[in-house]
Length: 193
Image 1: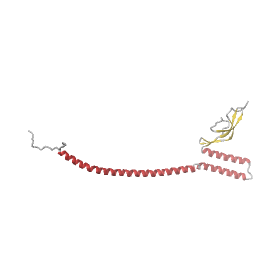
Image 2: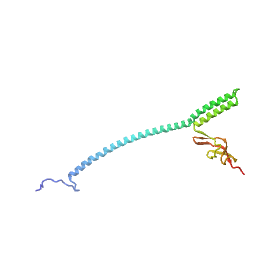
Image 3: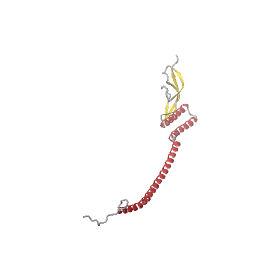
Image 4: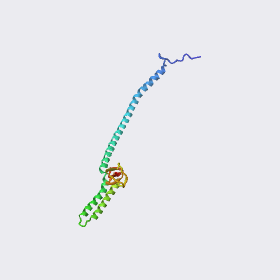
């Protein structure tokens, strides 16, 4: 036998149960306050992160400025003092030349001693050049190479095959394998019959 005296929950027009409507209203009230607090916290976090990123940006900008200035200074110094070591090598050559000039002024100087002094000075100079990557091109007796030689004239000859360097007017030079001056040469050609 059922108990008809027990009070059943009332429903409104939408069919919602009364107790459920109150519970939903309470939840809404709670949720209504929560987003405002969350937004404030989120905003504060966002500001903190924005400040942090801004400070990092300023720090990186300062570092980049310092790096740019340091690189520019190092580049300027590299251009200014690139020849410092080579210049030091040349100082001994200058010293040797000055001693040669002084020796030539002596009454006892002979052509032989002056020649020996000049040869020693030239040897010093070539050694200094070699230390710094300057190599001599002296192609006499070699096949003509238009990449490294400049033909000044042609010479008919039967003694060597055509297109050979038979004389060097002026030696050429390379700097670290890059041509800085071609050798000026005389090139052989077949004798006319």
